[in-house]
Image (cartoon, rainbow, N blue to C red; front, side, top):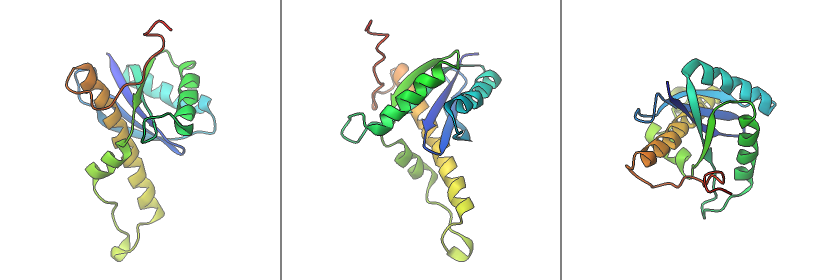
Length: 165
């Protein structure tokens, strides 16, 4: 099997999507709670990698709106580098600008609370988890579409090893 996982890394959660192979569509899979350490995050990912026969992770890299890498991108790169030392899979970084917004658009508004009041904390957390999974699917599908030549709307971040640097 040649499965791929899409990863939307957040401060509290990690949205996960899956594609069975490069010709399969990406679909939301699960949302993981961020652990206290990268080692624990890696253990949770390793279980998914083993269970689903994953050979590659496509991790969303949060560029700023103007296209520069900011603090969050640096945090994501550091996390990705640490994860790679624990997992025997390829890791690709993918521009994730606007994916959470697009995910929210696809999912529609958050459900209201009882009697039309504000949503409960449980409802907010469940909605945010769905958004994270959907954003991971968007990141992964964009990578798959680009590889298949169907579009190049978002840029893949350069891999220094591919350029011989």
